[in-house]
Image (cartoon, rainbow, N blue to C red; front, top):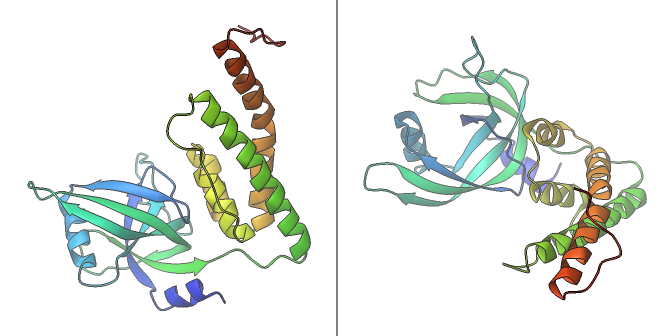
Length: 232
């Protein structure tokens, strides 16, 4: 059991914040807290652990909360800025994933979940997993460099440091504007290699096109002539 999993083992019941988005571990999520029930939640958090669960919830007729059995991610409040009208702007970060076992009637205006925390299972071939992670990291750096060039070198070049394969898979996944369905698949799988292989497919599909576009833009900016033309 990892140190992180051990830390959350005793935090079985936590507030839940259903949102129409998927939060991944290591992902930053700014939120504007204005509803009375979530103002109360934030106030309650100030007297204890700064954690609450973010569960994907896209309202449907007859469904008023995320179903049990679904996967979410714990958010830690890193910054909180109260506003004059009683609302707050907060900055949170995804920490660890959970499965929603059931709901607890804690007498609060917000939802409270009975949660089971989990991480990826240990893979049999560590060397193969490390090689896959390094390949995905290399592809990401190529895509990031091309995106930076296409932006006119504004801002700074995106950079993700090398880390464990599981952490790296989440760091790279958060760098893209993935749709909820795909992002949720990344969240709920407990296989690092499965997540990295999916990212590898996405990056391979993208990298050549982006590098070609960046090269064409660079030539155009110097009034040269590219060997390839963009199909219109």
